Length: 106
Image 1 (cartoon, rainbow, N blue to C red):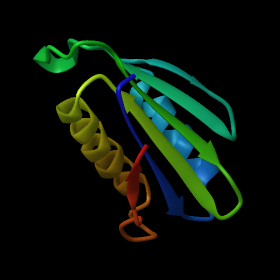
Image 2 (image 1 turned 60 degrees about the horizontal axis):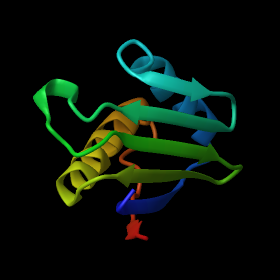
Image 3 (image 1 turned 90 degrees about the vertical axis):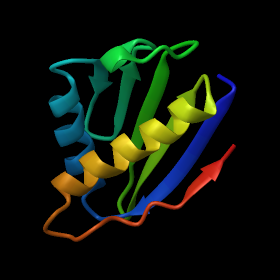
């Protein structure tokens, strides 16, 4: 993948959020997950898009943080997936308030 970005999101509930999000997206997307790791594939043509290839979102839950990584085939796809990840994770973390995402492009 040509474009990638990683965010380490401070939270003690990373495993919970990872599992909730993976279960939520498993209805429409290819998802693999356990208590500490999750992988979601966004097809290149999802929701009418026309990206060069699929996007991949991975998560790894630690005791104090959730590490989120996105691999994409274009800058637009990368930015769109960042937004989707943030919006969805913040929905599950509503009791905690908005999570702090600081993306670092690789």
